Length: 541
Image 1: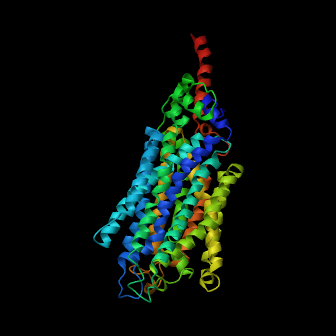
Image 2: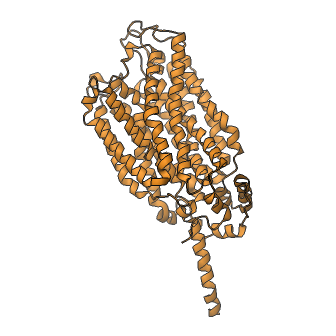
Image 3: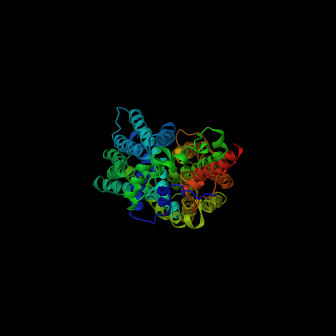
């Protein structure tokens, strides 16, 4: 049995490299992309209530305006539709053109569309929302490309001993992005509240939303471009990964030269050995071939379905946690607050959840993934998420009575902790490790797109599902739903199914990428087979 990477010195050098500065540079550059992704995707949930007040308030009614169901679904979900498309397209393109060249395209698209989202104008509320949705779709398209490319680049740069921690550290920046979204919204809403004080809606329907509130959501959305701009230069300076250059572009000399600079050591280019490796029949099959289905078909089903089920639960909670906080009376009723006070309170709640439940979970994964492995962490995460969701759902009435709200929030934070110290991290990491280099970005994109399909179901479905079962108590414009309690039961069942399907996903801890994909083994076996056949052929002659 060949040990992956032994065939080529450049791959062996990467696998055995000690942790050094270039690893941290790659984590920061790729991680800042994920920081931006999370900020852009989740900041919209902080300002949807404000958008409803600004554009859909009827001052003759007792409650401030809210986005109509179809508009709310579009504003919250359109970026996910773009992300799904971007993951498939840029994942495929990353395997065709190279990781580095496509990486710059996604970042520029994110910068342009973040700024354009904040500049969404129109003569009517519908016009503003339509423009916003248009730019958020393309923002999502750019974000989608970041998923397969960031994961693939980090996995191909890392050594095999700490690869899981490095990829997890890139993904962990998502937690800081969510946290930053909450903090930025807190600061901006607090500054505007201080500068433009306003009464509660019940005291003054017209003046509770000051005209300057329209700047608040625009500034919050546009600031998503800042971290992407700051890292663009460094992203363009990164060399193409040696695994792409060698195994896909088939240029051993360039791969050796690039990694000699990065690792600061002399690496010999081995073009003959590379040619032997990449031309093996079993190293040339495509995504839709029988060989791929036999070798990696169940793996792809496993990575795609577990990510799909995880995101149904993860995004339905994250996007609509402000509604959950309102349901348990942690955020006062809308008519008792001004528009900016409501934004402030929603962002404060999200910031606390991110600080207590979201960010720590990611870094537990970074610390432990190369110790206990991907498989164990994913199983534990799905199981504990099921337990805590049932813990929220079964005694739901208890949690909504006065005096028990803090307990609900603690339980809710634990579900987030085990999502992030669990499948939310591992479903991102594993697809970047177990597929061949020529299909790695594509397969990661397919798995991630499956996840975003789950996010769309969670985001759109939860809007309707979590509505009260009594039609008279639903939000304006919504039909009766199954209620928050029953929705939590559905999410618990989704997590339990994710637990079962995790058994389709192989453990990649401590193994090289070529060992997991079978690329090095195939080349060596073919070479050994060739050497074994030649003498007998001679004897026959």
